[in-house]
Length: 170
Image 1 (cartoon, rainbow, N blue to C red):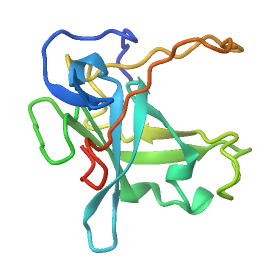
Image 2: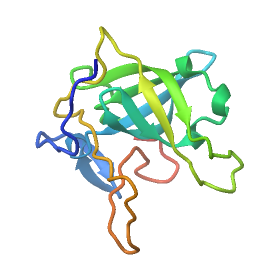
Image 3: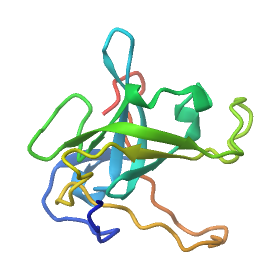
């Protein structure tokens, strides 16, 4: 059973992330998920970011799974509450295996169009429970169905990236 989250709530405790070259806190975007792929040599490789939309579901991009419907979910894991790629903090991070990957039926992996570039990851529950709400793990609010944003409306994007060109992902 999934716990009920209150979406869109930010925390005040500070840990750092980089936003547009400036420092932000992990608690300012506690819904950001880090998606990792396990290579054949068992190395964990950062693949994409995503957003926790409920205790057991992460929203991400379909292009993160180049094998499409042949993608093996068991080779993926999701870390919630992760502050930086090169550091781990088991006191705040929650790690889950991926149980299922659902790609949008209309997504075509051709490198030319990003139409329908959306996917859902179902987290594999641990001890009957998925993500637990904390100061560094919360769900994001989804827009109402059929909402159309007008041109010029400000939006906020959060994820993992590089501080400078050529550096490792943080």
